[in-house]
Image 1: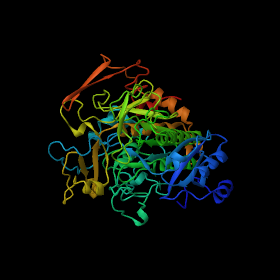
Image 2 (image 1 turned 30 degrees about the vertical axis):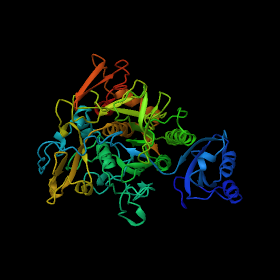
Image 3 (image 1 turned 60 degrees about the vertical axis):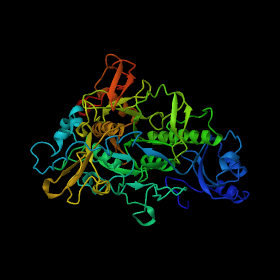
Length: 543
């Protein structure tokens, strides 16, 4: 790695120490993020040298040294109290295919949906399909308060299709950044992202080869332009802060870079509909984990918390999807899916409430559970009295019996992705009810139905953008409203929702029954947090 984004610099101290360091151990070299304790940078560099590594650069804002060494480096590190975590600079996360969203993708139900090709009488052409916007009053809110273009919303995801007709008007290409480089294959020769489409394996900032980030961005801020749908805050600007691979995997470092960059340019709120892997639960001291594994998990916990703190301290409101594991995050007992990268390393291990799902359980983050069209918690949504802060529509195709994609969330989709997945035929017509084509005005655009807390979180992000539009004061990037104030107003404007009766709610579907127990009161409980976000309340509430 020769160039460093996000403020990573080769400082004199580190450079001098690295220059006189002993030769690193032989073998293929890789980069490590070595997080040091307060005041421990020098001692951390000493430990890196003693372990056969070289210190390449440092990121003082987040407190880590970028070290280069071979595969045995972590095992050779001493037990220096200056080092609080070590993470390999590789892809160690995933979007929410099974973790936070996209549960509706790949499921075709019934006949193909008809095209929409009509003039706009009231609302956008596909507004009738947006039960989610009606549930939170966004359809009423955006007629009078669509949000300000001085508000910047960062989408940390797989990218944004900035050329989509229902995103382009609100897409800020100048500020958008791609923090990842495509990886065709992993070290074992297994396909990761596939062949590179662009020179240097670096996708442009207006490309999303997955579709997840585009859906999220569309839910937040598709404009009122007489095409397709409208987002929760159709007047704000979208900034692509890409941290996810084409495959949906994530590096830790791009997540750190995205958060620090967002803070430095004045982004007001970021949406994080993903979790950092390879650990579903990051445990600092889980029995049975090796030294390398413990340090990696500590690196994820520490690194992300420092980046989140840095962003929040600079005025960025942080919103995350809660997760799609149907788990009570306050009472985890086992994790059989980690470490899930590289493939084949998964094993069953005991976990407890000290183990964290990151960033959903990180401090300062507003975490969002998902509800279906009936208003009840979606069967897949994680929950927990300590973890659920808010709820929002995320879709549930099983809500109401049988399966129907129209119970999911409809938002913009990249045409290239849908064609690659066979969801659009040669003629351009959709081949599945998951996909809708709108040709209003003579330009065709595509939309898809998806489920997940990944889809719930952007509804909360959109409401936050409306609040910042109303109450923000001039500041860096446009408007500024303290994250603590945004958080309190999100909670104050949410519609309270009590636990179901009985509290032990049975979910039936897919040939099985799951029972989830809701704890807490109407003002704060494990299913809905402090309530379901409400855009109409947000644009009418008094500060």
